[in-house]
Image (cartoon, rainbow, N blue to C red; front, side):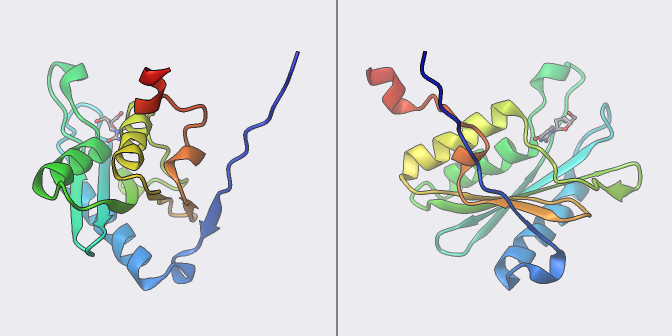
Length: 160
Ligand code: THU
């Protein structure tokens, strides 16, 4: 039997410790929660992406009476960005959530499906995408999606 450990590095920033660009991205994600269509969960999620050329693209969760058809904020933003700006790698993604009259206090954990889609972004552009998970108590930052989804299934996996 062999055993190995997979470790992820996460940095936690208070608002004043974020760079101006990161703070702008987090603010854009918070602002995007206002465009969420979430009458079923009442859980408003916002995502903001920074493209390599500096453009910021946002998205929010969009729900449906047929529950599984709804789409998370991250995927709404990613698919929109990749349609509008297919040549632009996404260098950073910030997520925020608002419910019960306040922003989610802990770093908002992206769902597994979104992590897989975020991983594809890194695979597609062959460069890491930083991920900023906003929480009122601190923003958790990872320098690559791989930190959120170890043991990845990517395009290369299909060739083995
Ligand atoms: N949601 C997101 O938009 N992103 C996540 O990463 C977690 C969950 C949405 C989906 C659904 O509209 C609501 O939050 C409750 O699950």
